[in-house]
Length: 194
Ligand code: GDP
Image (cartoon, rainbow, N blue to C red; front, side, top):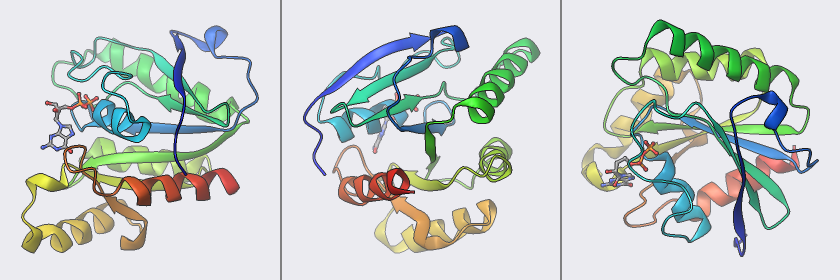
């Protein structure tokens, strides 16, 4: 699948601003700085559709991107940044719970984790969240260009164990080399077909 047209429809501060569209939705989540904006830009073949290097935690918005009028990519604010206030954590939790529990066109979650590190408690929590709400998910291991080839399979195994998922659902990805782009598009297709 190639993406021809990608457009930011709305940055929604609350449920009232979620678009009324009935397109199926794929939500993208991960720690701040994991490479989510870079991945969105790589997927869509754009330089600055999503804002790379956004100040972590500053935005509490769900960004809805219309992809070829076929589906929406929903970009969730990065979690797990230092100095998050309790209030911000509560707001984030409420926003995600609202979205996961009530958005009927939600088809799947793409969870991004940094390939260099073991998943954090927050990453594990996000995978558990998806399981609780019975949302199918794929995992992307980002920044693979920073992990020597000899260590990649070990990192994939580590991530799979921490998230208690199969190694097969983990897609190694690099926004620099664009490796993994095709595989990710296929995984998104599979989630949309569910
Ligand atoms: P976000 O906070 O999750 O949206 O992450 P960004 O896309 O803003 O990326 C955070 C930082 O990681 C930026 O400095 C990016 O240039 C860098 N980055 C993102 N993806 C990759 C990647 O695949 N490889 C490398 N080497 N750096 C990346």
